[in-house]
Image 1 (cartoon, rainbow, N blue to C red):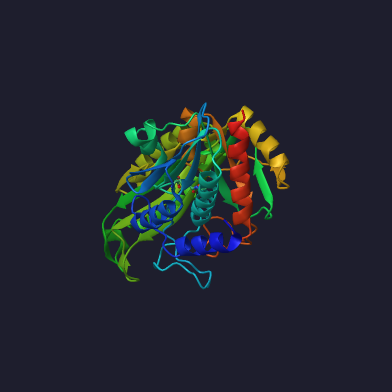
Image 2 (spheres, protein in one colour; image 1 turned 120 degrees about the horizontal axis):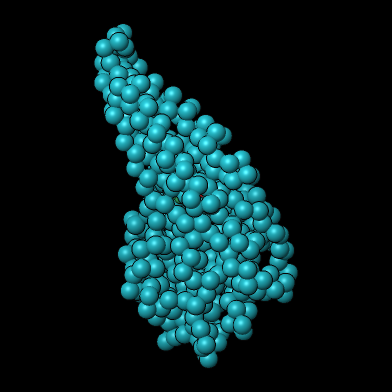
Length: 374
Ligand SMILES: CC(=O)N[C@@H](CCC[C@H](N)C(=O)O)C(=O)O
């Protein structure tokens, strides 16, 4: 597939970002494209808003999986691109439009030039939340085509186009979403003594929360607690009865998240007493770390060696990915693909360079061919 076609697909997909398990238009678009390329070797099955596409190999000894995530984020796009998101407040701000396009490009290449092994292309919903990987691998649709090894990519805005990057072992963190609801007593702004002000309680809670990592976690370990959204009150001259904090907890070790949660809940109990209010927590989606298999990372490096694409050794990152659940069950790896954007992942101005689409397809197709010889 040439760059013009890849770019057209990417721009089409960029305009229709949808949240987890609501990717109906995306699924429809992907299915139409897949059916355009398909021949007698291809078997297509849907799972919720996701799709599994199996391309039969010529002389198979195993099945190789390649996964692309397909959901967008609840972010208001500020790129001013001519193909800006058509849905207000929704954006492909994590590059899943790139991930899907590259998977389609690789799929077409493998259909036209089949390799010895079977390949399953997995278009997975809800990576940003509430998590599609775990229920997908538990489904009969997935189990029937369970790959023997698997890989995936993620765009990297900070890396130049023409570069890929990964490492053996831990690549991405363990994550837990965090939703905290405060319930107090509202009232007139002039009579705070008659109320239980949840704006003040939640603000103080955020400040105290930041001390969990610095005071309760071993400095040689690592954790992050971020509150990305805070809501309280309706009007400037009324005291808020409710407040809500939304955030995420991340850690390098799975058990460290439990320590953060335990301290957070102790803090909640203290705040309930000191602010005379009720506080509830919901941990939403939890993702298992992305842990790359040493042998498959070696294979990847060897396959990239033959392509002219540059390889850079990665550092582990506090990003999360539910692909971790697939790697927990099936050996494989995830790698970063350089897309050179001055704005990072989850930025409303993320603008990856489209030349990276061709690099991505080349890296994926070469890796599939190489793994098929192993
Ligand atoms: C690569 C990436 O940016 N992934 C997301 C995964 C989100 C997990 C979940 N919604 C959470 O916030 O904990 C990330 O934010 O790292």
